[in-house]
Image 1 (tube, protein in one colour):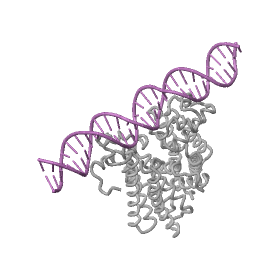
Image 2 (cartoon, rainbow over the protein chains, first blue to last red; image 1 turned 120 degrees about the vertical axis):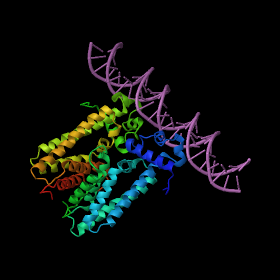
Image 3 (cartoon, each protein chain N blue to C red; image 1 turned 60 degrees about the vertical axis):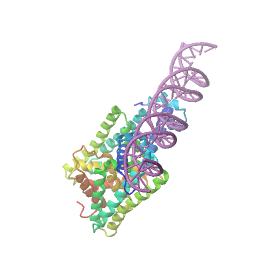
Image 4 (cartoon, rainbow over the protein chains, first blue to last red; image 1 turned 180 degrees about the vertical axis):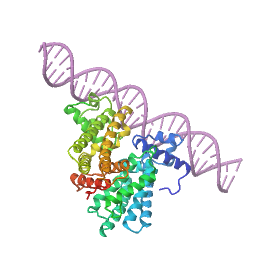
Length: 196
Length: 196
DNA sequence: TGCGACGCTAAGCAAGCGCTTAGTAGCGAG
DNA sequence: CTCGCTACTAAGCGCTTGCTTAGCGTCGCA
């Protein structure tokens, strides 16, 4: 939306993201957000028309970042096997390092206003099509042993998205290790011949 | 909790489960629940002390059912390969046919009171240990090619749990088909030799 | 020096929240 | 017939909610 948010706007967006991620949209009050950003409750409305527009801004930014990262990963590799591995690695890396944002992105969709929900749904469709496309490419050339591309897309994406739910930064597992392991799992699920 | 809930209690629990699943715990009001159960707002408190105790009753029942189904599936099979396949099939079947319950079970944990949360966390730990155990058994006998049992447990469970998020009963996919496909994916992830 | 624009706060409004209170209809036991 | 219990409702209490209003200090610019 806003291409260059001010420092105060960023503080509000970060505070809202953390609160939404921890307590959910409906579990968070505008006073929570204002306090976490070090402002009075009314200051929220200087920068955002409603509490829901804060959620939309966060959700939109998160989805656009995921889509961009997936496109770059796909473009930087040649074969479906390499592409899938690189895509899942970046996707999962994002879901761990920014797991609070990822929780808002994936679990607060129901709180969006209908027109905002439609915008986000379109982005989610694009993300899914990117992964599905690579799977279909590999299946077409028999590089993947993948009988059901649609269902396997859901299975792989489900494994990735759910990382945002269970990941805990206090755990010993490094994001890179989780990302690598997820990529290996995705290649096995796709039936990649070199997927060990 | 209550071993034999009355008809009114069941209606309240069902209404609360549907509302929590659709709008989340904090997005649901006690008036929503009462109206869906065909009662006045005060009637809720005849059967449940608080709104949160409704959530706990639903969450507890859901977790206990999952645990029971997984134990039965594991006991009815002999080899780790058969056990894992059967467990994932029942687990995912539950997450599709009762996906509203599964959403409450998996995504409303943060709304539980601390002591209730501890009870639920213990059940979740048991569920995870069941799957991890089968994976470890298969890895020990080289029936599975699974280098990292802990991480693979999370990956498999993530794929299963996320079904509750994306499953839509209006879609064409039958629960049984999703369950079968998930089981096949899990066997590939585990590195089962006969997992094709 | 004056002045409007901007970023912010103190105070508060109407609505909605979880939950309580007081009372009632219906029913089985004596 | 009456008693006491259970399941329920109408009304409402105190508080919190998202958001608004009125006003204040501080800038850049004439």
